[in-house]
Amino acid sequence: MVWLLVGLVFIVIAGFVAWSLLRAADLPARTDAAWLPAELRDARLLWTEETFHHEGDISMTVRVDRVYRTRDGRLTLIEFKRRAAHRTYRSDVVELSAQRYVLQKVGHAVDRRAYVVLVSPDGGSARALLVELQDAEQIERRAARYVELVSGARAPGRCIHTTICRGCGHRSICPK
Amino acid sequence: MKRKHHVTATDLAECCVCEQRVVFDRMRGKRRSGERWQHMQAGQAMHAELHRQAKLDLVPPVRDARCFVASALWGADDSRTEVLRTWRDRWLLTMWCGPALVKLYYASSPRLVCLMLRCPRMLLLVDGALSAVVRFLEKKRP
Image 1 (cartoon, chains in turn red, green):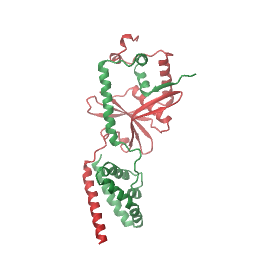
Image 2 (cartoon, rainbow over the protein chains, first blue to last red):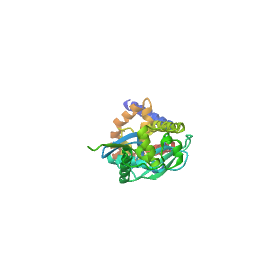
Image 3 (cartoon, rainbow over the protein chains, first blue to last red):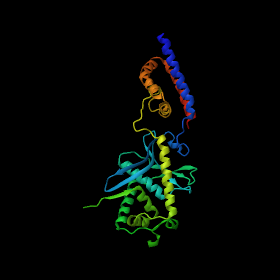
Image 4 (cartoon, one colour):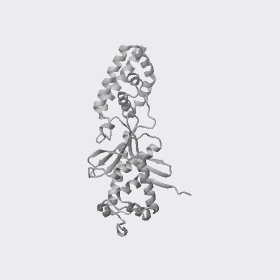
């Protein structure tokens, strides 16, 4: 009698597992499946929109869009840009490099390669472009230059392109 | 006394675009054209939406790494074990009787593993059955 009961319970559980497996057809796909690079298919999403801070001679705060951890334990950075042009800019690389700099300072091993995911302004497609990041020394130099600029110790350089000036609210007083 | 400076990643990125604008932003506050503000707001909305989506894929800070049978068969870090964990977390545990079933499994599976390790035929049988389940789940989920 007891074995019959055990058998019945087993059948019910097995039936439930089989049913839930069949229903797993509705299991939602990863939301990043459309654009995630092949190298990160097995990686786990670790952080999204997370802020990190490093206190040093020059303190730095960064906010990462996404960080994935690969099987070998290294972290890969992802930065989203809403952009029609299919290209990356130096500013993207510097932003990601600063993020890497801070994450490394707080003790994480971060891959030198990162991705800029370009999301088209109409919200349709998204595509990841690989970028090679700058090293810690370059970021420290840039941070030092920034401090010199805002403290008035160094004269600022000019704009990289006139199209940037069109959207700038300081045009009327800009000497450049 | 040396004054402490604070920099953000955005500050450094902005310097690549226009250093003069960075200095003006610091002195006078951020000033942009209407079109530019709209573009920036659309960018923020995109980030908020992607963040909302990403939370569905996020690994919980304290994830239950247990998966006794699959770990005994293939190892705790095997991709097949991970597929079963994902199925447990994203499907089974969201169902009304899922948590109870998982609890029952955790209570009984250590004994099942002991039994399995003693009996090679059973090991083969469970390996075959679980491999089929993993293949099925992998087909369903890209």
